[in-house]
Length: 346
Ligand SMILES: C[S@@+](CC[C@H](N)C(=O)[O-])C[C@H]1O[C@@H](n2cnc3c(N)ncnc32)[C@H](O)[C@@H]1O
Image (cartoon, rainbow, N blue to C red; front, side):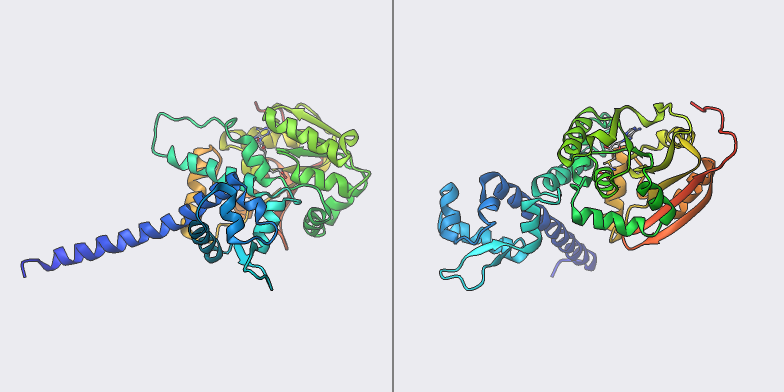
């Protein structure tokens, strides 16, 4: 045989690498199939038990092809076989049924748009000519985070507020609350509907996001207690007004953080409380590095730990800063001291 040991090893290594590449492709292909199923109406049809023949009839493909698609969705956990159905029928699995029905505001189309937008960022990562424009996918990102106000969302935020009783009591007493980086109002509208005496100001810089926030606030019946400001939070000029503030820090680019924090500190009344949340750290290294890359392409920092957030708040002049573990992740709470506010630093 003419081959050398190193050629043999190189062949093995190439086969290994190709197997990995194919493995990555599997997830992407399921996603493509899911997009196609959403576009053709399959996902809607699968909200009730349906046969493969019915699915095939939706877009005129063969029963054999429809069966193969269903096999993929079964193996991926997107659909399950309906119980006691004859002939055999299939229906969305529990999580995908909830995602498709979307009562929580967490919906298949929104989630697919959001992973698509993240993919666009990754594709542009090596291009020096593409500068990120935050307007491009602000609405997609805001929708992906913004759950609708409901008993379930109020229970979720309630689990967090239970661990910061001073903050919660101020919400219950009417605030006022300053919500910085409101998005489409996941936190803001759940909180306003949970505390009927609460008044709030929401600050959001993206016009299309503001429009959707206004619509959602009207739908939730809280618009009379909410003032929405379409502005960059760095431009806030309120002084010593708010009893509490929630800052969606994870979405604020590095170069805006110090000025935003200074504006929040000025806007809080002496003794006022600022609450921020640490985003959950990703499950593994690959996930973590991809998240960090997408964040970098968006100009925002990767996940900032609660300890680093605490340091950021202390540097920004907040006192009594504490990291608070809760069942829904770690929060960081800080207080605006009662001293004379800093000079403006813009
Ligand atoms: C995605 S939302 C976060 C989730 C939201 N708080 C909720 O609970 O649904 C964060 C928002 O902060 C906004 N944002 C980022 N930087 C901002 C700034 N400097 N001024 C105002 N809004 C900003 C983004 O446009 C984005 O819509």
